[in-house]
Amino acid sequence: MDKIVEELHKIFRLKDSTDVGDIVIIVTETPQTLSYSLITGFERDTTRRDEWWHVSMQLLSVPPQKVVWTLRTEQFTGKEIFTMGGEKRYIKAVDFSGPEGRPQKEPKPQEKGKPAVLRVVK
Image 1 (tube, rainbow, N blue to C red):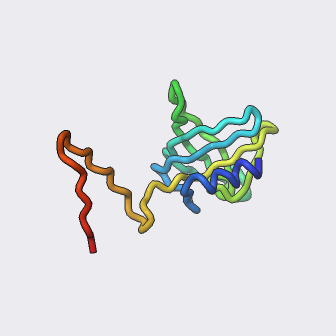
Image 2 (tube, helix red, strand yellow; image 1 turned 120 degrees about the vertical axis):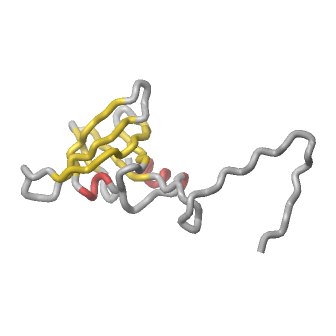
Image 3 (cartoon, helix red, strand yellow; image 1 turned 90 degrees about the vertical axis):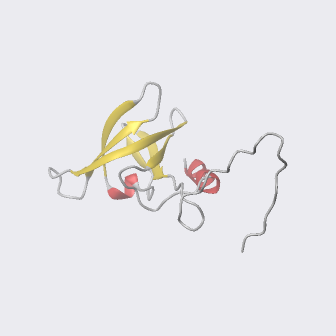
């Protein structure tokens, strides 16, 4: 599992925090799968002494599924690999912003018959 997580960090730009509206990658060890989920909410679990959260997610699967997992902050922010039902899992938010922290613009589609033109931008 450690090797999979290490490879993920090489392939994806990942966030250090997780907020409502973030897309997270979920890795499970057995069976070895990678899936995506949309974070839809956080609610403090007041029944526990330590800081635990009910993390509401919409699994981006077919069919989509709503789930609520009770996790600590370190678990849903990718700071630690954890187990659920004896199976190792890892969750971390994907960073879709550009290198400067702004969302990347989609490239404009090239018009038919027009050659691509490069311009110098300062």
